[in-house]
Length: 126
Image (tube, rainbow, N blue to C red; front, side, top):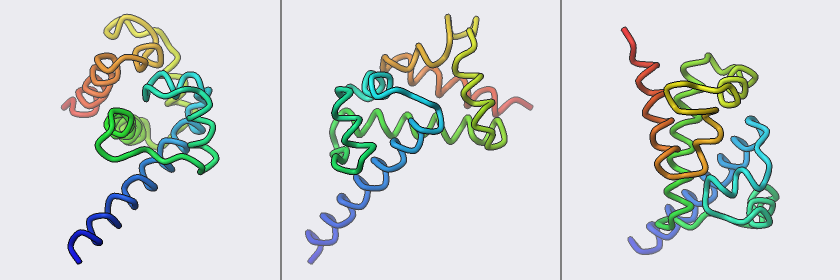
């Protein structure tokens, strides 16, 4: 019985995170290639994810990267007051601290984590 419950939790986590990533890509106007570069997936796989025919697999690298992408989204959303246009503008504007537009940093694991940490630090200013 516990195994069945764990399988259901895993399936639900995959569905929820996959749908969240598809929505984030839409909010931020990410192309399939851009979203794929962030998650380590091909553009056709992102297209299937957006269409609901593909789910991220819990425990996989793309799943972990998607969790970090969701963290960044939530941090930006909180910091900028749920203003998607401001979030897109911030992502596309060159940032001296990050060494370029934040969106360009997201294609590497280091860049994704650094950008997330940066936004968290901005939100925590007193």
